[in-house]
Length: 537
Ligand SMILES: Nc1ncnc2c1ncn2[C@@H]1O[C@H](COP(=O)(O)OP(=O)(O)OP(=O)(O)O)[C@@H](O)[C@H]1O
Image (cartoon, rainbow, N blue to C red; front, side, top):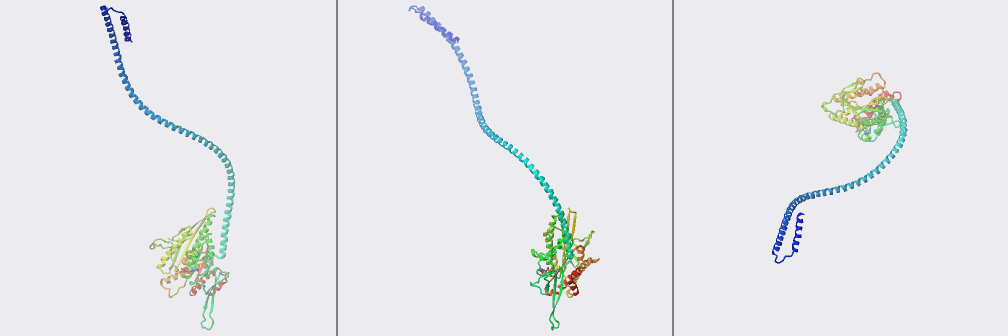
């Protein structure tokens, strides 16, 4: 600003000079003008120089400033680069934030939506809870009333049930008493006769059965005239028993009679059933029968009845345990038919009496059973054991007694009563008499043993029926083993099985006579036929 003022002052002086006109001659004046001009110019130059310097100064200053500004610009530019990068990053962040924001908005909307729904649900729940509460209260009240009614009903039903149980128990006891009275009236010892069908079929000619009461049987023998001049005569042998079954009688029919005794076994009475008769007369068929349902014999049917009846008595509080054993008596020696061990290690057996006077056999298999199938399995095992012995000794089973025993123990804990009994089913050895010519050695020994034990059985039964003070149980293994099941309140049933073929006449007559002896000692008063029979001897 100072420079500019100085330069502005110079032209005003020059102008003044320029206005003064010099004469051409006035050289001096002219020189002085010139000098003035020079001085002015000099001043101008000086001023200009000064201005120049000032300007140069300011230019250099400006340069410096430019450098500085450029530097700053440089810095600024590099900062700008950084800023741009940051800006880019921030733009990315902004994008993300915007996305997040839009997500947030979406979620917010959803949330609002859900909150709305939740509120609706809450309202619904509240109303349902109120409804439920009301329902609960009313139902509870109703249920409580019903429950009280039910309790009352249950109490009265329980009383009725208890009363009916008492009545049922009294009824059951009365049934037992009556059943036993009937059995005793029928006789604690009974004899049934069963005629086997002819081997070739058809009806036997010399064996006639009474048609009226199923109790009489007539054995007829035609005797040829020795002289040939008189007509042949027919001799009739009449017998009567508690029941006679003809060749057509089914296993079911036969069992119906025995089933009453089987019931007695469950009622706590010992029951013993024998099959007596010559070899091939049908003893095993009667006692065991075949495997087919209709032809099953006494043992499987009795067992079936017992388990069925025990199940029914279970409803009245009775609990039963059953123990089965199966023993063979051959030549007065006992053999366990349920033995499953090595034959070389077969133990020996002895009949013993326990301290409570019960008969037991040492080393014998006593098998706990609870259903029919188990017993059938044991019968099969016994048959297997018998057939093994059979191969070693021909026809052995006919010459041995086989005794199946089922020990029955019943407890009625509620009534504090117990009952104990044994059901004994015996397939006796063939009863044929000794033929002297054939009976030697072992065979003679066998026959003696069989005849001995069978006749002793007759003697024991007779002694029991006559209520004799001494009963010779110990005279044979069979009666010693069975003494618990014979006598007292026990029920005894003897089957006499007979073969109807004419060539068996002698043995049949013999069997009928033996059975009649037993029958006769039992009913000497009632059965006239027995008296007739006795006279035949
Ligand atoms: N009532 C009957 N109905 C049909 N078949 C019978 C009858 N009784 C016996 N049998 C048949 O007669 C044959 C001989 O009977 P079973 O074996 O029962 O005689 P057993 O007296 O037991 O002879 P053993 O003393 O040899 O054992 C058998 O084949 C048997 O099936």
